[in-house]
Length: 483
Ligand code: BG6
Image 1: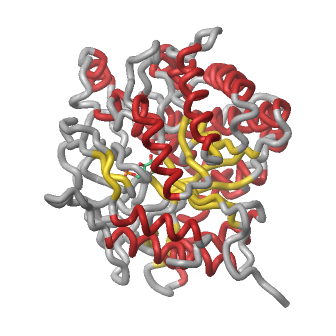
Image 2 (image 1 turned 30 degrees about the horizontal axis):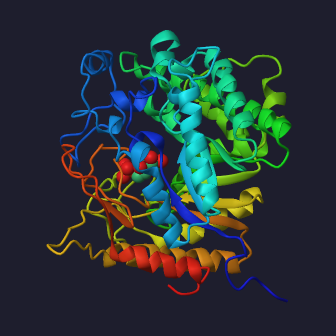
């Protein structure tokens, strides 16, 4: 009776990013504005509303041509630094680099019939640079950054029309990069759609809560269909493509052993796994029928939608993992925080500076849970520690706290692999410091590479290796043995 002793050969070690947090060049070479680029920087990092774009704030953003209040417009200028950045990733020994294509670089308004060649050429340059170092691109087709034109024209994913616009875009990039990219993801953190604008690209803050819920689940249905159709489209273009789903995984624990609390935690976990149930199993799980009925939600389906979901099952399941949370029957304890987290605090866990509950064992629990439920290859495409790093006078960053965080998570990954979980790879979040998705701060840093830029956008943009840089290099060189 043998079992795996460590990570498999060809394990995809690397890092993950998104165009709107990394690239900058927001208005260059005919790129259109994206939904991410109208989200204002949060002024209070602990007390802000995730994902708040209203008609008024959008109007204001459209009349503000600067990147001061909208840091995702400037990112960290990967647009001009990609060669230097990829070289640094290669020096760490990266096997994979997850990035997103900014849909609005390819179709600036989202509804054009001809793609923007300058946008396509940029990603050619990036993929060619990665190929020089044998780094496998892992490409997210939509990472909270749809063309804003589709919001203005048809309220984003609230409209079924957006499926057609998305498939025109995916057809172009699948064909163009058919021999440069093998690994694709459809929607980043598909569960974000039920939280509003960032996921749906639809303005809904004027709606009553029930109507808002109705709109978000309908928009989500359109994304499920778009994703399933893109999976089929991609496989036709290149049968070697591996196309995955992506979930913001929320591991939930019961607050006590009281059966009602355990049931509450199960319910909360199911409401997180419903998204991957649809994308991996190809159908809505039964418990959602009850949820929809009890919340007055009716999903408008067209004939054939159920077949589309079945025929468009993903090849693998990828997810982000930053924290776990706690649920009780009454959900009455002190609240925990995190992107899309609404549970309670766990007294056994430490938190990051941003209050996110750090839980390496939770990653193993999640890996085992997902493997047991789905039996498809798993890919951790985000995990990491956002922290305030200090640059010393002699130009160094001593980030032992980051090394400790990553080491503990990788140890637990290895335990799951020994249990028999099929794990394809690990791309930690933000190998190079970038703009935060939630608060748009620069000072919430995740990287092995420090970028000289502050929250106001001042700085030389110089890239500096942190202590964690050499540590990760050693981890990759030893295939996760030397931690
Ligand atoms: C995930 C997103 O939710 O978390 C990333 O997919 C994001 O885009 C990451 O950056 C970390 O969140 P934040 O808010 O710290 O940047």
